[in-house]
Structure formats: structure tokens, C-alpha cells
Length: 280
DNA sequence: CCCCAGGGTAGGG
DNA sequence: CCCTACCATGGG
Image (cartoon, rainbow, N blue to C red):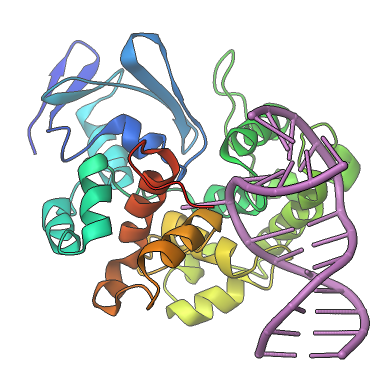
């Protein structure tokens, strides 16, 4: 992995086929990244603000040291995993081939567990622009202020002390009590997020589903995006369409250990590609 | 008015 | 086990 620094910025040499920041950060797996002018992206991750820009052969990490890159961003973007071989394997399947060719540089991020869990609780029966908007308002109201206009995701400690009335105006709808139940179970230690990740996946599923509002789909999303369990396979309304259209005999078992990665390529393709079939 | 969005719960068959 | 009404909110 070739990296170099120039003034305060770090330059990572990488092809767009190996990491495409817009496809990766705007594909519905995370909710706190925004496109800026000048083709930049800015996001809030682990109580930090990061701005990126991609060129043909590199990604620029603004105001980033080599140490910070090695300690944080290399893992967040999962740069030690060989996606080329994963994609090669998945592309034996035709729908996956089309989906991967549509967004080659899409990677599954290794996100913060609590933030991912809360975010996908908020995501239920909701759409991505509204999810982003609600999370942003939640952060502005209850997250630590990181700069003049940027706020971190709230801690379980802060959220666990709130009541439903404290969440009015955030457009959470009926999900407000689900979020509070999640924060209370995490803060009290009834659910230990550090341990959930090392449980056998079925036990992790069961543990997460003790939270009100966490059913099969939200649990799979939390495991995939917040605990990096790439065998987790969330089935939302879009993936239901994919399954009924392409995989009437079920999703291929040969991909089961990496089904979550396949799922994300399919999700992004069916939702945003002009070439994807309109199913409905 | 309808339907839909990264669904889940409670209740009844 | 299955099926269904309902949940709060905003956009199309």
C-alpha cells in the first residue's frame, strides 16, 4: 500500500476499481457522508471529521497523518482485505457480475457498532434521505460538538438518559422508543457490544434482537456493517426484489461466507443503476 | 386519496 | 407456524 504525505494531506495510491469513495460512502451502508463541491466527500466517523478526494490513481485524505491513517482509516476502509479475489469469485454469477461492474470499487466499511446499530434501527420502514436527515438532527441535538458545524454521533450514555419527549422534532416517528431501548440496554451492560462481535453469529443475532425494534433485517445490518460479519445477509424491500427476480431458488450457498458483500453490490445496483430492471 | 421507504410488533387464526 | 393491521413521517 503506497502512501505519501504532502503538507498536511495524505495521498493513498489506489485505483478506483479497488476503492471508489463515492460508491462506497453513498451506497446506503453509512449515513454521515456528504458530497461536497469540487468532487470531495466529507464525513463524520469515530468522533472525527474526514474529507476525501479521489483522482484517477489516488485518494487524498485531507489533514491526515500517516499514523492516523494506519491506526484508523486503513481498518475503516478495510484496505487489508483483498477485494479483487472476492469480486472475481462473485462474478461467476451473472447478476453479481453486472452489479460489480456497475460499482467496482465498493467496499464494506468497518463502522462503529453502536452507531451502526442505532442507524439501522432508525432505518426501518424508512428511506435513505430521511434516515440521513434524522441522524443528522440527532447528532446536532445530542452529539459532542467537534467543530463549528459538526457533531459526533451521540453516546449510549447520553441517549440512555433521554425520554421520548426529548426526541421530538427529529422525525424518528414510532422508532423513538426503539432507539431509547437500544441505548438503555447498551448503557446498562445488558448488551455488551464488545462481546457481541465475538459470539457465534446466531447468538449475536439473538442478543441484538432482544432490543425492541430489532428484528431479522436490522440485526443483519448491524452485524454486517457494525460488527463486520460478512456472512450476514440483510433482506430489505430491495433485496426482496432481487431475490424474486434473479434468485427464485434462493441465494447461492456457495457465497454464504461472503453473502453480505454480495448483498451490498446487488442492493446498490438494483436501487441506483439505470440498467437495473425496474421491478415492482 | 394512494403507495413507498434498508421493518417490527402485537394479535388472531 | 402463518397472516394482517398498524405503527410515524415525508416524498412522489
